[in-house]
Amino acid sequence: MAYRILSAALFACLVAVPALAADEIRPSGPAISLRVSAGTLLQSPRPLASVFIANPEIANVQAPGEGTAKDVLFVFGRAPGKTTLYAIDIDGHVALSQTVEVTGPKTVRVMRGGTSYIWSETHEPAHEGAPNLADLPAGSSVTVPVGGAK
Image 1 (cartoon, helix red, strand yellow):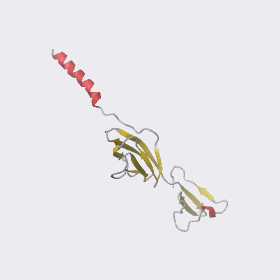
Image 2: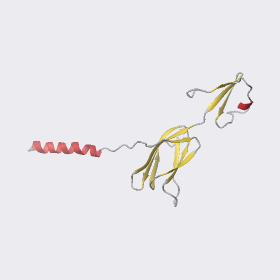
Image 3: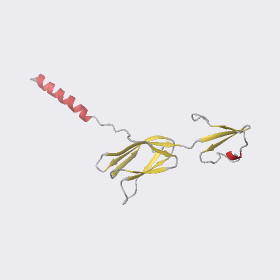
Image 4: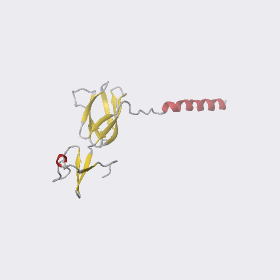
């Protein structure tokens, strides 16, 4: 008799353990690609209750204020990198789960004689006195760092 009770209890525990495990929800769909200091609007298929961003130093997310649509989000790129965005609808279900990829400006290093100048994609020289790329004479050497080398 005790064996049957013990067997039944063990069976009940084995069946209940998988039911207690939480489901992992990974990002789905295409990544949201942004540049630093740029943003995009996302529209959810359902009204949202909560929004989460894994690393707010890489991207920021804002929902509209009171009295506006609850299904729209603004995602803003803050620094180069990858993070994850999750939005939960008013019924507690995951409405959005996407990776956010933020790219930074590319830089170019120009060597002119013994002087090195660095430009970013903003087309502004990194320091005063640097010549415009268009003003460089023919035959000037332009070096683009590979793999982020400086």
